[in-house]
Image (cartoon, rainbow, N blue to C red; front, top):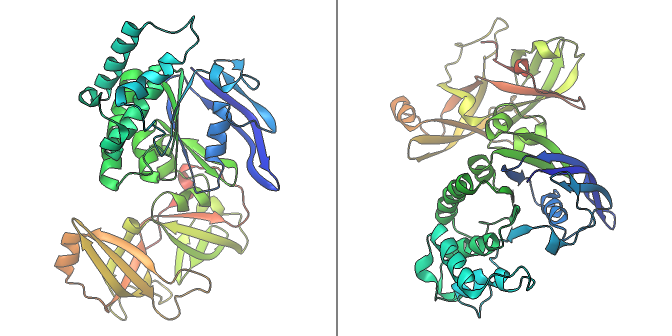
Length: 382
């Protein structure tokens, strides 16, 4: 079932939870609503479900306005973070509950209910737990039972609110893979809320990034990662270093470095911010007098290696810019990532002076509206 969200707004007192949100969700899609706490993602999910009513706007299911349709008539299934299983009921009874409370004219007979429940428990690979109670299950098992119960009434839309948030990291990863495989089998239109970027990028067909009640960007996981539509998206998705400087007539100057930026050829001494991923920083030892540009300045940022964390194949380096390369109000730590093998071969030691040079950076001008284009990400002049 397709879902159309049209100009939905919602306030709680003076707090704007949603600001004129519009979104199209295709039938059979798995969509992630991603963003920090308080960005409006759960409020939007509850309005889609009918658990909340927007102050303005409308929700259409398969082209039909459901704004005034009661939650029980929307054919929506729910899975919440804390399972919401009935403690006094067995696994079988929990899954059967939605079928047994249907109106008499729609209610299956007991044989049909039993068949349906066992099919669902088989689908989530937990049919062997039918006679147990929720207290006897692990967190991951409870969440799979909660999903089976939501599927029992054959909803046209499945809504999941932080479904794996209460689980430990290993179980979350296993359930993410499992949910993706299950969705590929069933193709039920599904929307899940999360603040975990890895979860959204790994599971969803498309990611809806939300901030302060508005949609910042919608796209496939690869699109939003490769082409962030705003500074917020760039900073929210993954670790990033932020450098402040100035853009002037197609050149960006920051922390002693100079970059060509043709996209900003019209800028006149404008404030600029450059975002650089840790793995996009080249790391070399600093040799005084070497590696200078035409003006006698280092082609990168001179910094002291404060801490090195080597875990598995990656070495994470925390560096403190040398005096003169630091900027007021900026995080003093620069994060770089290099292969652990390279770290060992270079024989780097904490306390050494290094030079870090961005291979790629993304520049935003302060206060400027920005539309992603290929040229907005540039390579530094070296």
